[in-house]
Image 1 (tube, rainbow, N blue to C red):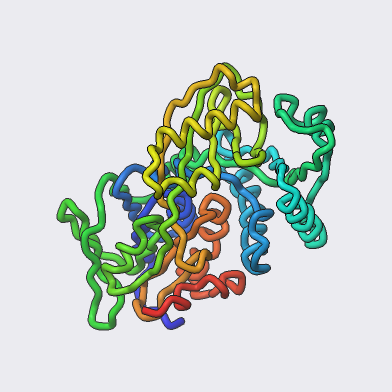
Image 2: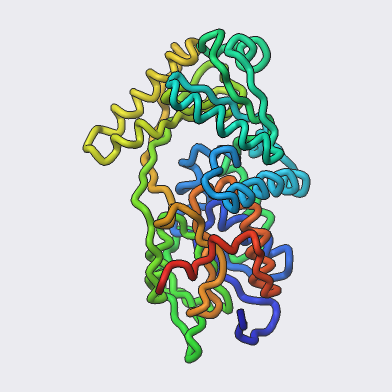
Length: 371
């Protein structure tokens, strides 16, 4: 890619300060870019805060390049925790999964074997062993085979974004939406106009706007096709969190979110969101499932639920990198943003500042979507 000649430091506007935008901004700032962080709301309080926030590669085996990118994301988290300190945002406690469906169980064990063959750490335990060694509070059959991935984790996304944004040397434009983007005679980005009328001169724009990424792209005449895929996340409170890690039980995913808070999610429940069923009723369904799987949650209560639109490009894979038709414009849009944020931040910073296009992003570049 041939870049426009600009004077260092590059003036970069990152649009959207969820986990991906925060990671991109932090990496660029560390390399001396002149940063502006823009978010229509507040950092980390959008889809990042309403994600299940599970850091993994075990659920990403459909395409080898995608598995490899997510594996790199796991490694990048360990580097990030060493650099900024783990504190309350980083929880590398592993991930446990089992199912009550024979066909799904066969698939689970097949995937576990595939992952083990790729060098991914996998353990298989009986239900009795799980309760004895990992999660005593779970209800599960003694003989069921459960898969444990010890290197996986969960992240408190809002805490991570807050920490990264606080360590990024940048002008903050929060609570202000982008209303226009102007280009120069060469078609490259020149200015960003905000909803309060402010105009920012820029050399580079990074579109990390999550569910709003298609609208930002459209301001530059680009069509970024996105899926409609809403997800419901429910938070519950209890006297003491009885589960210590990410757990995928039959029909339910749950994890800790603090000492007295847990997060619930289910793809099966998500399938009912567009049917007109009341989201509050769906949240109660999640809560009932959680109390069945973890009897210690009998006295827990729902504190908040939200349906959030997942930021998923049309083919299901990330859109990361330069858009050649618009010099200075880059995309950083992905589901799995929690897993991929640190590695996307690192790779995209190198591309922006040095022009080096990472081979690991070859299958996920924006140009696969025609303008």
